[in-house]
Image (cartoon, rainbow, N blue to C red; front, top):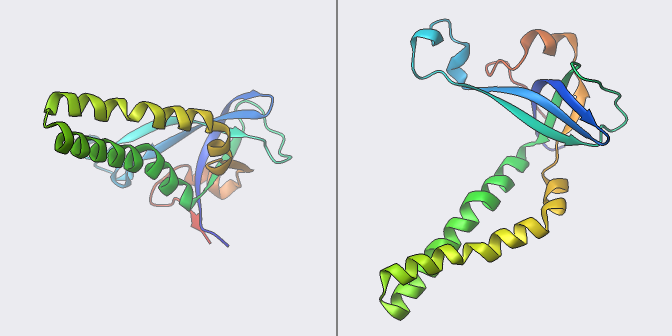
Length: 156
């Protein structure tokens, strides 16, 4: 069985098959007792769209656990950062070697990203299915722990 990453969250909105869940993503040191006096602690609130509740009946304000496959994060990073960077650098180097004009090469490398993002847009539904989240009911223990990064659950 694949590893799963779980975050505690609160249902913010329910629209048909789409459920918006508010999660708090915290750095590991934000739960420290002196985090308020330290600049290293960080906490961000995020809204996650979950499509299809897998038979779970939820309403606004319900406590849930958002579940994602551990590999989903890697795929998202590759699609949003690694591939565009490779395209950018490859086109830049090739254009500089061919033309020798740095300004044109920089503009061409930026324009080369347009087709990539167009393809990403066209395949957004497939990508959404591959990188989708699911939700589970929050147990009492998870409600108490919340999104404490030291107690965040990574389950096999």
